[in-house]
Length: 304
Ligand SMILES: Cc1cc2nc3c(=O)[nH]c(=O)nc-3n(C[C@H](O)[C@H](O)[C@H](O)COP(=O)(O)O)c2cc1C
Image 1 (cartoon, rainbow, N blue to C red):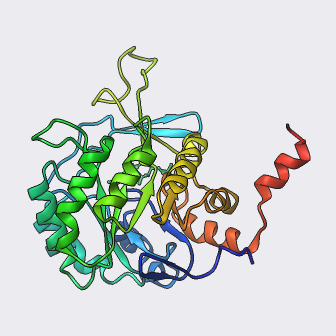
Image 2 (image 1 turned 180 degrees about the horizontal axis):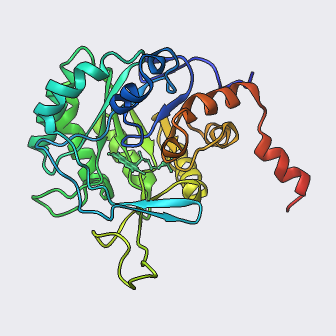
């Protein structure tokens, strides 16, 4: 077994293995409907991260919302969700039946709403930790919170007193210096960081000559982003002492091993879940059973 493939502890959470899901890439409630209780017996992840919830319900963006690219996809889903009250009433009881710790992802456009979300969610016994999706503008400053180290630090200072449960900051990759934002999160009192979220991206539909996505642009994910994610992870873990959850294009145990070697404590699987709903279990098994096949292939090629 690989040294990193067994039980792991992060920010006080004890997990059976180091593979979780990326927020918004695995609908556990729909999967339970499709696969029945077999999903619970063979749950693919060692913790489950919810889709990001916002204070009020959102319908998301108009279609077209997904566009396939070489080795990836661009999405502009637009955070459709039931809002805080709908989540607590309808989704939380079902997510609480999952056999793993639940991490709830939240996003708001001002500190007051962020506080309301964190307090309401973290107060629930069913919730083990809260992930803060900071890739959104602050309505007061107009700045994207997660693009500014000082804004990120101030947000954490406001949220930290509200709960003793772990607060995980999901970093945006769309900045020159993600490590500076991670340090801001650390100074504000975060327990961990996760990265990367999707990279800003566009595509033109060759049939129309118009933007392929109705929103005009979206976020790129999948294997295409993996080397960027690895570099940002290395920079972040070198600069700040918080444990990191690494993600971006993980689709195999060898990919996951790269993230762990680059400093991640946990690895999240995202886009690959759409292709293979059992990807989490497969990645965890490959990580446990295999050496780093990807590294060996590179050394056979003897590339300098
Ligand atoms: C369709 C889709 C929906 C997503 N929704 C969310 C979300 O609600 N909240 C969030 O923080 N990240 C969201 N993400 C980003 C993923 O959690 C992840 O950070 C990113 O896709 C990189 O990992 P991957 O390349 O393995 O997909 C979404 C990604 C995709 C593809």
